[in-house]
Image (tube, one colour):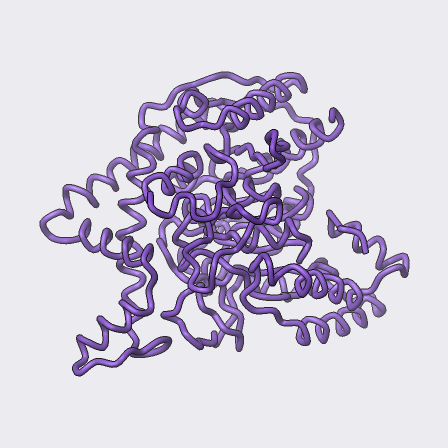
Amino acid sequence: MKNFQLLSEIRSEIDAGKLTVSTLTQHYLNNINDKNGRLNAFLSVYGDEALQHARVIDDKIQKNSAGKLAGLIVGIKDVFAYANHRLQCASNILENFESQFTATCVQRLIDEDAIIIGHQNCDEFAMGSSNENSAFGSCKNPIDETRVPGGSSGGSAAAVAADMCLVSIGSDTGGSVRQPAAFCGVIGLKPTYSRISRFGLAAYASSFDTVGIFSKSIEDAALILEVMAGADEWDSTVSQKSVPKFSSFHSNKKYSVAYLHETLEHYGLNEEIKKKTLQTISNLKEIGHRVEGVRMSFLEYVLPTYYVLTAAEASSNLSRYDGVRYGKRADGSELSEMYTNSRSEGFGEEVRRRIMTGTFVLSASYYDAYYTKAQKVRKLIQEETNTLLDQYDFIISPTTPTTAFKIGELNDDPIQMYLEDLFTVQANVAGIPAISIPMGTDNTGLPIGVQLMSKSFNELELLDISNQIITFKDQNR
């Protein structure tokens, strides 16, 4: 069976009688069986259940009662609740835990007849940039299995790139959808903070966490966003704004685009990524968009601001995992010892590092020096970003400073690992939508991504310009 790029291709073959959802589901299950032993992209696969759902959907299609996502096979990152299925957050602390409910975004996909094929590997509690922090082993990049797929949603990106599902749902706290999308050569969309309900998403940093989408096409990303977005009675932070028809994004509109000199001049930027970004800027000009270089005074403070605040929120959010109510419980002669042993044994090194960092910045002696100051800087970054987006429709930059690095290459250098988020964290600090689109490969065949950011709730135009860029690139190969 061919490697489908679009849900509309699948639906055309189903409507023509050339394909059934059951056959398609078996195809993806076969791919998982063939590849997952090497890639470690899926932690749980729901084969029998997926095939059972496929037969029901085939019957619905015959009766013309199927939902708009019938034929869509989806993998979900192991941070999304799915009722009566294990939810582990790639961590030992949630040993044998089963969710009692389903995340709103996942349920909305199911309601439109998408099939959930399994939970995908990730960095533990979504903390990482390489998928090497998983308690269940690193996921590998399907383009080069000696390299990381990116993180934290590495398994989700790898699964789409390796044709183990058509689409994946991930979470993006500081680039965890866009960075692995760039490393694996697929599309990664982070909507505006609050555009999609976070109910059922295991919390890492609640004021940053955003549900994101991996796909092979802008068309599918738009349709899935349309289905998942919108108000939800279970999430008091979700936006009440009406949801546009994102799937109608096509236009020939010309936009204004800013590129940040600081990103292209950064000492850590790979030269081939710089070249591809400059080529994308040239392409934008060629198809009639206005593109100008700008500078941002607070850009150098974005990454430290992000890590101070997310560590603080992680310290608070992860306090609920104590060995008492669910998950791993270690032995201890008294309650405090049981807490300590459960958390020490259950959490991995990177999660412990961020919890301790967050506890430190929230402590009475350092609260004002770190946490309060970081909140003030975040506000300044948001204001400067929004001012820039009042003048331009989009900001373009590289998605990542490097291509996918070797597994184990940065394990002894957490600061260098954190720098992999250098260009992506701004969108999360500011709460704006952003997308990574594949723009070719370097001279070794490793994928390169380019990022676009826009003002809050402007996903429709973000999808439009992304589609224009990809269409122009494909037509001029």
